[in-house]
Structures are given as C-alpha cells and as structure tokens.
Image (cartoon, rainbow, N blue to C red; front, top):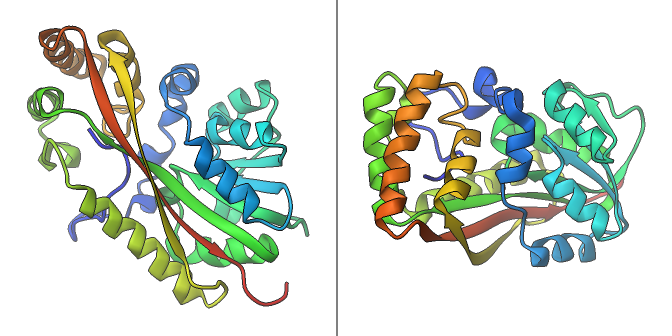
Length: 274
C-alpha cells in the first residue's frame, strides 16, 4: 500500500489542495512517529555532503523523523509544519518548529544550506514551493525532496485493497490498484524535477534511488497502516474492518512479511547569487 502521492488522475485535485488530508496525520502524532520508518543513512549523508554548510530547513517536518536524522549528522535543523499537533510533538523531541504552510511561511531574512522535504512535498504547491526554496537557500544550497515507495507483497496488498473498497467505496483511494508500479512514482519525481527546472533558479536536478528491505510483524504493520493518507480520515468502524482483513492476511504468511522499500529523491543545487 504505497503512501507516496502519485501523479493525480485528471478528475482529482492536486495533492497540495487536499488540505484536510494533509493536516489529518497529527490526529495520532505519537503513533505516526513510532510507526513510520526513517530514511536511508546514505541519503542523509549525501545531502549533507552536497550542501555548502549544515543549516537545514525541513519543510513539512511532521514529528521530526527526518530532522532528527539530520541533527544526528551534525546539522542545525529548523522545521516548518502546518499541523500544530505534529509541530508540538517534534518540539518535545528537541526540534525547533514554526507552524505554517511552507508557501505562507515568513523566513524573516534567514538562509539555509539545504532545504529538505521528507514525504511532504506533494502537500506543497509545486511551482510556488520551488521558488520559495530558492529564496531561502544560500548560493549552492541544495533542495532535496524525498520519500518512500512502499511495496508489500501481493498477499498483503490485495486483501488490503479489497477491504478498503468495501469499507470506503466513496473514497478516491478505493479506485487505486492493490500494487502500483515503481515507474508511476519515478514519473512523479520526474515531474518534481520539471517544476524545479521551470523555476529557473536551480542547476539541473538529479534523481537518486535507494533500495532496501524491512521485516514487519503483524502488529508492526497494523501499527503503521493507520498513519497513511488513505486511512487517517476513516471512521473507527471502517478502519477496524480493514485492519482485521490485513491482519488475517499477515497471519496467513506466518505473522511476518518482508517489505521492499524504494526511497526516491529529486535534488538540485541553487544557481546564481542570493
């Protein structure tokens, strides 16, 4: 059940306009932080090594999962987060956070060596976001937009999709196939690169890819599922039916399965002078 935003069908609004969904993740910030996976260390290292310094702005920082990894790598990180509940959780974990949508956030003259967006850029207006990132980056500063593609085995994905269609037939998420090809997400990150190029403020974007795996028990996977975009706004009864179906599917695999992850990134260095 991938949770990255894919290229939207024409009849659906762009993700950045779906504010109710975008701001629904804070309903259980503690579960979100506990269940969501971190990002590959190699990605963090590459962003830091390719930036002129260690001042980092985390756009849509959520509970601070990525930000804490960059802090551990020696960076000074400031978060910008529209959901006050997520921001409060991140602050409690040691991350300074300002509550605002990135497009409306006031940098007050501050500048950064890197602007990152971890699993959050699809909630930002893509054209305005690239321009705003360039405005707050120092010369040769790096914009890095990244996120996970989840690919559970068919034995887990298909019962999930069937249960979701039964529980929430009116949801636009219900029409999506159980498993979506990686190429769909690669195309989405290529679109991000196109928006960055169109801003005229960056050198040629690069596409990075990191493949890895993680084993999940039944309980671990059922802990993560309610934090994903298609489930955060469901009623308790709808959610319970989906989790029951998925739990039975994982039980049939022996109570554990291996998740294949691909973490994709589009990144570019700011051109010109500030």
